[in-house]
Image (cartoon, rainbow, N blue to C red; front, side, top):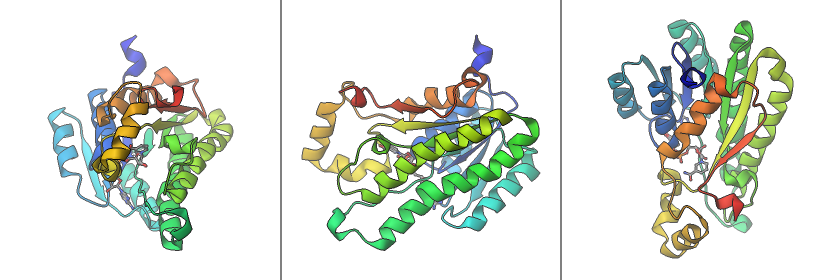
Length: 251
Ligand SMILES: NC(=O)c1ccc[n+]([C@@H]2O[C@H](COP(=O)([O-])OP(=O)(O)OC[C@H]3O[C@@H](n4cnc5c(N)ncnc54)[C@H](O)[C@@H]3O)[C@@H](O)[C@H]2O)c1
């Protein structure tokens, strides 16, 4: 049974790996046996040290994934270092909060670029390598706002809706090549992404009141779902958006 979740010998690329959910998932993969390519535009030193303590290899890349050329650099370096990419987690993402009536083109474009466009083109670049071995696992980090509209975050909701849909369209085309493409939709997690919400007492209380688990999620809470979707345990799961939200969507 344990072998179903074993990632020994696998190479996982995680974007946005320096903190938050990306750090949590990277540690989960390392504990399951994978080596890691940690990508972020700020240093991933802390994550790297934690993974090295687990005895796994790391490649750390400081790249701005808003730039399309970063995608080529990332995939070429990962393959020249480890020989392949088995697992890709498209986790790097940003959020901009402004009422829709005042929302700027800049905040629309930047959020869409990193949260959606990069997700597709980095997946495409990794899938070209995965197809050579007829095996690969792509995990896109969506959000509850792939299903709901949110408040003051129109480009974020649009970008995460796109993540859910492009996950399905890639699955439809690449399942026959041995690649699974699934998404995780985290609920309200205590990371930098939600610090503004957690500082707003009224908003924080109204969010907590709706979470059946009665608490904000933690990076460790997405590890199980990530390891499942990265491992042979999920080989026949494709195009799925897995909610990890303490029960929010059931409400
Ligand atoms: N925290 C939540 O409640 C929550 C809920 C649903 C979905 N998510 C999603 O989870 C993912 C991770 O978010 P988090 O909560 O850990 O937030 P976070 O802000 O702590 O982490 C995001 C990471 O992405 C990196 N990043 C952002 N833009 C980048 C760029 N252009 N190039 C390279 N790296 C970049 C950041 O440096 C950071 O390390 C995001 O896609 C986010 O939208 C978070």
